[in-house]
Length: 298
Image 1 (cartoon, one colour):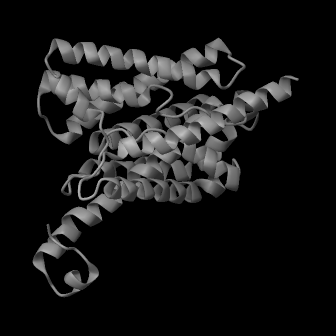
Image 2 (spheres, helix red, strand yellow):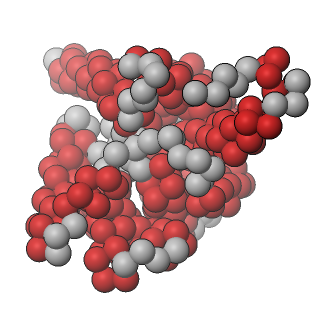
């Protein structure tokens, strides 16, 4: 195993430079972009739904992207990453649009029920994916799709797609904050509510699809990072969006380092590490929401 350190890199060691340029740098960029993108996607989804427990993970977006990626593999075989991302994007967008439409019609008052329904919805999509994978003998491929990992040798080209929706997120940050105040309030200010919502769903689906195809699922990032960030910086997306990106990137970088050190010299899938840490944090916010709702009702 090559010893990659500052001294070996500066001394001109070819192996150290190769590992640094083709593994370390692309991996770090992929961590930052995917974490920043999913954090912003989660906050936009929470603004659209006006629910702090909504995210690509709890709304079936990630599961729909996995289903689209599976269909791409089943019917088109090993196509380019762009084709796979296109399938994942279409299914992620349609899946998210369907779920948000149903939730808005149900008019559920208890906000903690939304993520539970979303997980059930995602479970149904996951079950359909399993049936399709079993029918076409692609179970192993589906299992590989559902494991998030940054342990790839520079194969992160698709994650750069996230830059485009991030730019639109920054440009429309104020409008996303306004729609978080409600449809009537946004329309009174002259904002085209439906257009902004559709743009938000496109951003969410594009980020979710690109990150899923590039690195796999990163659970809870779009859920816990916006909640943690807004606890410190408030709900104004325009003022907090860069802090949100930085916060998400630092969290995933910490999980990535932990994944590489837990069973060193081997590496644990980062989706496992994030699931454990994110699950604990999510349960804390979930219990706070339940008890907070009971106190308000009392």
